[in-house]
Image 1 (cartoon, helix red, strand yellow):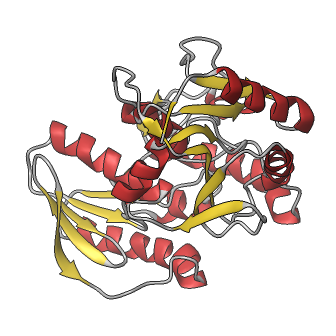
Image 2: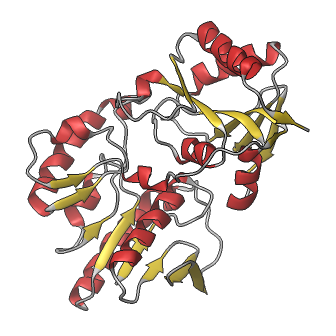
Length: 315
């Protein structure tokens, strides 16, 4: 079995989603699995991934990485199709990417589809709904079974006859007993520079909280706000340590089930989410605080009151 990935890193959302999906495949299939990624090739045993070939460094923010490398995966799908090997294209799979759904070789499988109905106001993203509908047609013609990372795009498949699994990312959540931990930081944020990330409201909330002397730290891209402690990009183990030392995480607003949000819950850290990104009115974790991010002062006060009333062990 050959698996193509555009990102298999352990500290990015795309990479974590790919690893989670491959681990699920391994549990169901005991055949040998080879994973192709931009910087390494991997094999997988029952517990972990093993690097078997180094390909060199790659700039994941480059045009090649974002737009050319995914298309190269289509050529590989045909190569392995003619070799008679099972090929699975795991990521990059946003619903707007009609070229992948059109040109992948016959009998190719695909990993969890990603995407959100919420976006910025750029001209390109205004055509996304049209691309979504084209993708829906292609997927209905070419696939009998699909997996979606979340249920954000569920409305586009109401009339589809495809067998669909939504909210695959929820398998990442662990059933744990909440333990008291030492908390060094009030708030933790995972920041990525991306046009689809609604950081305007988040920035306003952060500035409001800083005026209340709240200690805020950030992992990921550098957040240029005076008073925020930036740790930069960390390996997965170190990032989880920082998250576990924080009282509350602030989730982004374009997606509810982010890996950052689930890492917070998995590490006994509460998290605040934009209620406009939450579409399920059941099974809401008690450690999740919902607020309307567009209401800056209300959200800021909710967070401040939560931190004031909650009991934490501080060091």
